[in-house]
Image 1 (cartoon, rainbow, N blue to C red):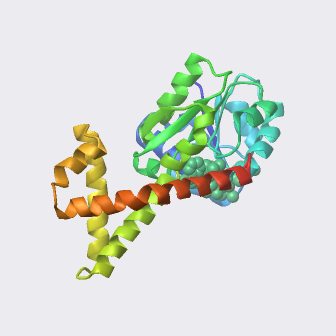
Image 2: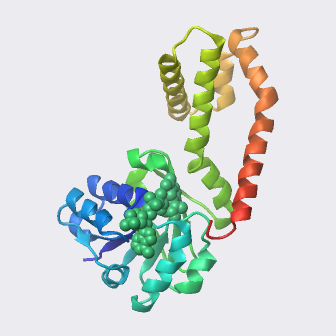
Length: 268
Ligand SMILES: NC(=O)c1ccc[n+]([C@@H]2O[C@H](COP(=O)([O-])OP(=O)(O)OC[C@H]3O[C@@H](n4cnc5c(N)ncnc54)[C@H](OP(=O)(O)O)[C@@H]3O)[C@@H](O)[C@H]2O)c1
Protein backbone atom coordinates (compact mmCIF):
# COMPACT_ATOMS: atom_id res chain seq x y z
CA UNK A 1 0.00 0.00 0.00
CA UNK A 2 1.41 3.41 -0.99
CA UNK A 3 1.35 5.90 1.87
CA UNK A 4 0.94 9.67 1.65
CA UNK A 5 2.84 11.71 4.22
CA UNK A 6 2.11 15.25 5.39
CA UNK A 7 4.89 17.09 7.18
CA UNK A 8 3.49 20.00 9.25
CA UNK A 9 0.05 19.78 10.91
CA UNK A 10 -0.78 23.50 10.84
CA UNK A 11 -3.53 25.37 8.92
CA UNK A 12 -2.76 23.74 5.59
CA UNK A 13 -1.62 20.34 6.84
CA UNK A 14 -4.77 19.84 8.93
CA UNK A 15 -6.98 21.16 6.12
CA UNK A 16 -5.43 18.64 3.70
CA UNK A 17 -5.86 15.72 6.11
CA UNK A 18 -9.53 16.70 6.52
CA UNK A 19 -9.97 17.13 2.75
CA UNK A 20 -8.34 13.80 1.86
CA UNK A 21 -10.10 11.76 4.56
CA UNK A 22 -13.56 13.33 4.66
CA UNK A 23 -13.95 12.95 0.87
CA UNK A 24 -12.58 9.41 0.84
CA UNK A 25 -9.78 10.18 -1.61
CA UNK A 26 -7.51 8.49 0.97
CA UNK A 27 -8.26 6.09 3.81
CA UNK A 28 -7.04 6.83 7.31
CA UNK A 29 -4.49 4.00 7.11
CA UNK A 30 -3.00 5.52 3.95
CA UNK A 31 -1.95 8.81 5.63
CA UNK A 32 1.04 9.51 7.86
CA UNK A 33 1.57 12.87 9.61
CA UNK A 34 4.59 14.39 11.31
CA UNK A 35 4.83 17.82 12.91
CA UNK A 36 7.24 19.75 15.09
CA UNK A 37 5.19 19.69 18.29
CA UNK A 38 3.59 16.85 20.24
CA UNK A 39 0.55 19.08 20.72
CA UNK A 40 -0.18 19.14 16.97
CA UNK A 41 0.37 15.39 16.63
CA UNK A 42 -1.92 14.67 19.59
CA UNK A 43 -4.60 16.88 18.01
CA UNK A 44 -4.23 14.99 14.72
CA UNK A 45 -4.40 11.56 16.39
CA UNK A 46 -7.50 12.64 18.38
CA UNK A 47 -9.26 14.01 15.29
CA UNK A 48 -8.45 11.04 13.05
CA UNK A 49 -8.23 7.77 15.01
CA UNK A 50 -6.08 5.24 13.16
CA UNK A 51 -4.05 7.81 11.21
CA UNK A 52 -0.30 7.18 11.02
CA UNK A 53 1.67 9.43 13.37
CA UNK A 54 5.41 9.60 12.68
CA UNK A 55 7.66 10.60 15.58
CA UNK A 56 10.10 12.28 13.17
CA UNK A 57 10.07 13.66 9.63
CA UNK A 58 12.69 11.08 8.66
CA UNK A 59 10.45 8.27 9.90
CA UNK A 60 7.59 9.61 7.74
CA UNK A 61 9.93 9.98 4.74
CA UNK A 62 11.09 6.36 5.01
CA UNK A 63 7.47 5.12 4.92
CA UNK A 64 5.78 7.35 2.34
CA UNK A 65 5.81 7.41 -1.46
CA UNK A 66 4.19 10.87 -1.68
CA UNK A 67 5.49 13.47 0.77
CA UNK A 68 3.64 16.77 1.16
CA UNK A 69 5.68 19.47 2.89
CA UNK A 70 3.21 21.80 4.63
CA UNK A 71 5.57 23.93 6.75
CA UNK A 72 6.23 27.67 6.48
CA UNK A 73 8.32 28.71 3.45
CA UNK A 74 11.39 29.46 5.59
CA UNK A 75 11.34 25.90 7.00
CA UNK A 76 10.84 23.98 3.75
CA UNK A 77 14.45 23.54 2.66
CA UNK A 78 15.52 22.62 6.20
CA UNK A 79 12.90 19.84 6.24
CA UNK A 80 13.99 18.71 2.77
CA UNK A 81 17.67 18.58 3.83
CA UNK A 82 16.59 16.59 6.90
CA UNK A 83 14.72 13.90 4.94
CA UNK A 84 16.96 13.79 1.83
CA UNK A 85 19.44 11.27 3.30
CA UNK A 86 16.73 8.70 4.11
CA UNK A 87 14.63 8.76 0.91
CA UNK A 88 15.14 6.49 -2.11
CA UNK A 89 14.91 9.30 -4.68
CA UNK A 90 11.75 8.16 -6.47
CA UNK A 91 9.33 9.61 -3.88
CA UNK A 92 7.10 12.45 -5.07
CA UNK A 93 7.79 15.59 -3.04
CA UNK A 94 4.98 18.17 -3.01
CA UNK A 95 5.66 21.61 -1.54
CA UNK A 96 2.89 24.05 -0.63
CA UNK A 97 5.22 26.95 0.02
CA UNK A 98 4.85 30.24 -1.80
CA UNK A 99 8.23 31.50 -2.97
CA UNK A 100 10.27 28.29 -2.74
CA UNK A 101 11.11 27.50 -6.37
CA UNK A 102 11.27 24.14 -8.12
CA UNK A 103 14.99 24.80 -8.69
CA UNK A 104 15.51 25.27 -4.92
CA UNK A 105 13.66 22.04 -4.17
CA UNK A 106 15.38 20.10 -6.96
CA UNK A 107 18.79 21.27 -5.77
CA UNK A 108 18.19 19.27 -2.56
CA UNK A 109 16.02 16.40 -3.86
CA UNK A 110 16.74 15.07 -7.36
CA UNK A 111 13.46 13.10 -7.74
CA UNK A 112 10.00 14.31 -8.82
CA UNK A 113 8.92 17.62 -7.28
CA UNK A 114 5.62 19.51 -7.55
CA UNK A 115 4.50 22.84 -6.16
CA UNK A 116 0.85 23.10 -5.06
CA UNK A 117 -0.78 26.32 -3.87
CA UNK A 118 -4.11 25.80 -2.09
CA UNK A 119 -6.16 28.64 -0.65
CA UNK A 120 -8.06 29.33 2.55
CA UNK A 121 -11.29 28.45 0.70
CA UNK A 122 -9.91 24.95 0.01
CA UNK A 123 -11.09 24.20 3.57
CA UNK A 124 -14.69 24.28 2.25
CA UNK A 125 -13.80 22.52 -1.02
CA UNK A 126 -13.99 25.79 -3.01
CA UNK A 127 -11.57 27.91 -4.99
CA UNK A 128 -8.74 26.91 -7.27
CA UNK A 129 -5.66 24.93 -6.26
CA UNK A 130 -2.65 25.75 -8.44
CA UNK A 131 -0.41 22.87 -9.47
CA UNK A 132 3.04 23.26 -11.02
CA UNK A 133 4.90 20.05 -11.79
CA UNK A 134 8.68 19.95 -12.07
CA UNK A 135 10.39 18.41 -15.10
CA UNK A 136 11.05 15.13 -13.25
CA UNK A 137 7.35 14.41 -12.60
CA UNK A 138 6.07 11.56 -14.81
CA UNK A 139 2.48 11.18 -16.02
CA UNK A 140 1.60 8.65 -13.27
CA UNK A 141 2.82 10.86 -10.42
CA UNK A 142 1.14 13.93 -11.97
CA UNK A 143 -2.19 12.09 -12.24
CA UNK A 144 -1.97 10.79 -8.66
CA UNK A 145 -1.16 14.26 -7.26
CA UNK A 146 -3.99 15.85 -9.21
CA UNK A 147 -6.45 13.18 -8.00
CA UNK A 148 -5.27 13.76 -4.42
CA UNK A 149 -5.94 17.51 -4.52
CA UNK A 150 -9.15 17.38 -6.59
CA UNK A 151 -11.53 17.18 -3.56
CA UNK A 152 -10.39 20.51 -2.12
CA UNK A 153 -11.47 22.63 -5.09
CA UNK A 154 -10.86 23.14 -8.79
CA UNK A 155 -7.36 22.48 -10.11
CA UNK A 156 -5.38 24.65 -12.52
CA UNK A 157 -2.06 23.49 -13.96
CA UNK A 158 0.33 26.45 -14.27
CA UNK A 159 3.87 27.14 -15.41
CA UNK A 160 6.18 28.32 -12.66
CA UNK A 161 6.46 31.77 -14.29
CA UNK A 162 2.71 32.19 -13.91
CA UNK A 163 2.67 31.19 -10.24
CA UNK A 164 3.20 34.57 -8.54
CA UNK A 165 0.33 36.35 -10.26
CA UNK A 166 -1.89 33.23 -10.29
CA UNK A 167 -1.26 32.97 -6.53
CA UNK A 168 -2.25 36.63 -6.08
CA UNK A 169 -5.62 35.80 -7.68
CA UNK A 170 -6.33 32.37 -6.22
CA UNK A 171 -4.66 32.38 -2.81
CA UNK A 172 -4.26 36.08 -1.88
CA UNK A 173 -7.54 36.80 -3.70
CA UNK A 174 -9.82 35.79 -0.82
CA UNK A 175 -8.03 38.40 1.31
CA UNK A 176 -8.42 41.04 -1.40
CA UNK A 177 -12.08 40.23 -1.96
CA UNK A 178 -12.79 40.22 1.78
CA UNK A 179 -11.39 43.76 1.87
CA UNK A 180 -13.66 44.74 -1.04
CA UNK A 181 -16.72 43.19 0.68
CA UNK A 182 -15.85 45.15 3.81
CA UNK A 183 -15.59 48.37 1.79
CA UNK A 184 -18.88 47.73 -0.06
CA UNK A 185 -20.65 47.23 3.26
CA UNK A 186 -18.86 50.28 4.67
CA UNK A 187 -19.96 52.47 1.75
CA UNK A 188 -23.57 51.30 2.23
CA UNK A 189 -23.41 52.14 5.93
CA UNK A 190 -21.88 55.58 5.26
CA UNK A 191 -24.48 56.27 2.56
CA UNK A 192 -27.10 55.75 5.27
CA UNK A 193 -29.97 53.57 6.36
CA UNK A 194 -28.44 50.12 6.94
CA UNK A 195 -27.06 48.51 10.08
CA UNK A 196 -23.49 47.09 9.82
CA UNK A 197 -24.78 43.49 10.17
CA UNK A 198 -27.34 43.83 7.44
CA UNK A 199 -24.94 45.67 5.12
CA UNK A 200 -22.29 42.93 5.52
CA UNK A 201 -24.88 40.20 5.02
CA UNK A 202 -26.17 41.83 1.81
CA UNK A 203 -22.67 42.50 0.44
CA UNK A 204 -21.47 38.93 1.15
CA UNK A 205 -24.61 37.32 -0.29
CA UNK A 206 -24.42 39.47 -3.40
CA UNK A 207 -20.73 38.64 -4.06
CA UNK A 208 -21.36 34.89 -3.62
CA UNK A 209 -24.43 34.96 -5.87
CA UNK A 210 -22.75 37.06 -8.57
CA UNK A 211 -19.78 34.68 -8.82
CA UNK A 212 -22.16 31.68 -8.93
CA UNK A 213 -24.29 33.41 -11.61
CA UNK A 214 -21.28 34.10 -13.83
CA UNK A 215 -20.11 30.48 -13.44
CA UNK A 216 -23.48 28.88 -14.03
CA UNK A 217 -24.69 31.01 -16.95
CA UNK A 218 -21.30 31.27 -18.64
CA UNK A 219 -21.95 35.00 -19.11
CA UNK A 220 -18.94 37.28 -19.01
CA UNK A 221 -18.86 40.20 -16.53
CA UNK A 222 -19.65 42.68 -19.36
CA UNK A 223 -22.69 40.48 -20.34
CA UNK A 224 -23.98 40.67 -16.76
CA UNK A 225 -23.37 44.41 -16.61
CA UNK A 226 -25.40 44.85 -19.82
CA UNK A 227 -28.34 43.04 -18.15
CA UNK A 228 -28.35 45.10 -14.96
CA UNK A 229 -27.05 48.48 -16.13
CA UNK A 230 -29.84 49.66 -18.39
CA UNK A 231 -29.31 53.01 -20.11
CA UNK A 232 -29.44 55.98 -17.76
CA UNK A 233 -30.11 53.82 -14.68
CA UNK A 234 -28.59 53.77 -11.23
CA UNK A 235 -26.33 50.72 -11.75
CA UNK A 236 -24.92 52.29 -14.92
CA UNK A 237 -23.85 55.39 -13.00
CA UNK A 238 -22.14 53.23 -10.37
CA UNK A 239 -20.40 50.98 -12.90
CA UNK A 240 -19.14 53.99 -14.87
CA UNK A 241 -17.68 55.54 -11.72
CA UNK A 242 -15.99 52.28 -10.73
CA UNK A 243 -14.55 51.78 -14.21
CA UNK A 244 -12.93 55.22 -14.04
CA UNK A 245 -11.06 54.42 -10.83
CA UNK A 246 -10.85 50.65 -10.29
CA UNK A 247 -8.27 49.66 -12.96
CA UNK A 248 -5.80 52.16 -11.50
CA UNK A 249 -6.40 51.00 -7.93
CA UNK A 250 -6.05 47.32 -8.86
CA UNK A 251 -2.95 47.92 -11.02
CA UNK A 252 -1.38 49.65 -8.00
CA UNK A 253 -2.45 46.76 -5.76
CA UNK A 254 -0.84 44.15 -8.02
CA UNK A 255 2.31 46.26 -8.47
CA UNK A 256 2.67 46.51 -4.68
CA UNK A 257 2.17 42.76 -4.27
CA UNK A 258 4.70 41.97 -7.01
CA UNK A 259 7.19 44.35 -5.40
CA UNK A 260 6.71 42.60 -2.05
CA UNK A 261 7.01 39.19 -3.70
CA UNK A 262 10.28 40.19 -5.38
CA UNK A 263 11.64 41.77 -2.19
CA UNK A 264 10.99 38.59 -0.23
CA UNK A 265 12.61 36.66 -3.07
CA UNK A 266 12.82 32.91 -2.93
CA UNK A 267 11.70 31.30 0.37
CA UNK A 268 9.38 34.26 1.16
N1 LIG B 1 -2.46 29.47 4.85
C1 LIG B 1 -2.72 29.63 3.56
O1 LIG B 1 -3.74 30.22 3.16
C2 LIG B 1 -1.77 29.06 2.52
C3 LIG B 1 -2.17 29.07 1.17
C4 LIG B 1 -1.31 28.49 0.22
C5 LIG B 1 -0.09 27.95 0.60
N2 LIG B 1 0.27 28.00 1.93
C6 LIG B 1 1.58 27.44 2.31
O2 LIG B 1 1.36 26.32 3.15
C7 LIG B 1 2.47 26.20 4.02
C8 LIG B 1 1.97 26.01 5.45
O3 LIG B 1 1.25 27.16 5.82
P1 LIG B 1 0.28 27.14 7.08
O4 LIG B 1 -0.60 28.33 6.94
O5 LIG B 1 -0.31 25.79 7.23
O6 LIG B 1 1.35 27.39 8.26
P2 LIG B 1 1.20 27.02 9.82
O7 LIG B 1 -0.24 27.00 10.21
O8 LIG B 1 2.16 27.87 10.54
O9 LIG B 1 1.69 25.50 9.91
C9 LIG B 1 3.02 25.13 9.74
C10 LIG B 1 3.23 23.85 10.51
O10 LIG B 1 4.55 23.41 10.24
C11 LIG B 1 4.97 22.72 11.38
N3 LIG B 1 6.44 22.68 11.37
C12 LIG B 1 7.30 23.71 11.43
N4 LIG B 1 8.58 23.29 11.36
C13 LIG B 1 8.51 21.94 11.23
C14 LIG B 1 9.48 20.93 11.11
N5 LIG B 1 10.78 21.20 11.09
N6 LIG B 1 9.06 19.65 10.98
C15 LIG B 1 7.73 19.34 11.01
N7 LIG B 1 6.76 20.27 11.13
C16 LIG B 1 7.15 21.55 11.24
C17 LIG B 1 4.41 23.45 12.55
O11 LIG B 1 4.26 22.45 13.49
P3 LIG B 1 3.73 22.54 15.00
O12 LIG B 1 2.33 23.03 14.94
O13 LIG B 1 3.77 21.09 15.39
O14 LIG B 1 4.67 23.42 15.75
C18 LIG B 1 3.09 24.01 12.02
O15 LIG B 1 1.99 23.26 12.43
C19 LIG B 1 3.34 27.47 3.87
O16 LIG B 1 4.49 27.14 3.14
C20 LIG B 1 2.44 28.41 3.09
O17 LIG B 1 3.19 29.24 2.20
C21 LIG B 1 -0.54 28.51 2.90
